[in-house]
Image (cartoon, rainbow, N blue to C red; front, side, top):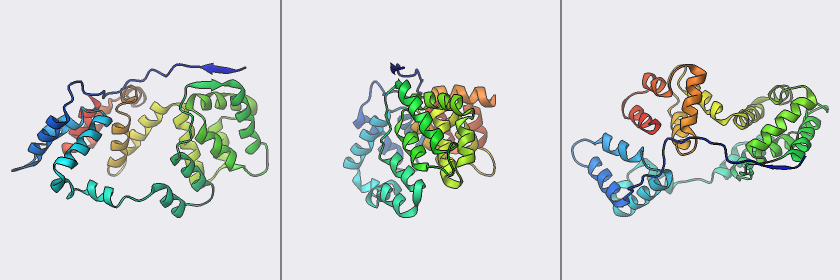
Length: 266
């Protein structure tokens, strides 16, 4: 067994860079839509929901430079001025292996390639087994290192070997070996590694169920995945819940918030 080179999975985004992008035209249109009597939300939504993340950054920077008298009054500008170091905050507010896990994720040490090393997968599966089921107590540092450093395809290979080795699914092993917040973190990482699009479909559904709607989660996933695999997530959502994501959003959200998200969904 050796190194296997795999091509990047074929995922479909809903937003691609706008071909006729003109940053000055966009900021002038947004300025016009924001001034005067009332706000032209349709114009703002149409622009921001059809530009890539890089293009939106250009719009933000250009708008700030040209209209800094307005933008300094925005909550976003306040957050920029008073921005805290997230890693430092986590180190202050958490402890133990939960802190180590979160800091490791923030340091972005995960391999982003699409290579699978079968020998490494076997080694990692053995290490996970020896760190958990095969000993008294759990060596959390081994779980943390592997789950935060290996690429998702590598982890998928590791999980398959782990099940063959131990006779237990990795999620069941974590459920019995870990507790509390750390267990929740491990389970989230494993589910995301196994099938990222299904994971995000489940998160979107959970954000719209129960009392109230978790708008932060909806924005984070829909905007964050719009240039990666949102079209694929939409397909997964329909397959899992037998309703389109657009229809689900339409029934749970309202106003400009709903219109913006649906525009991003395309």
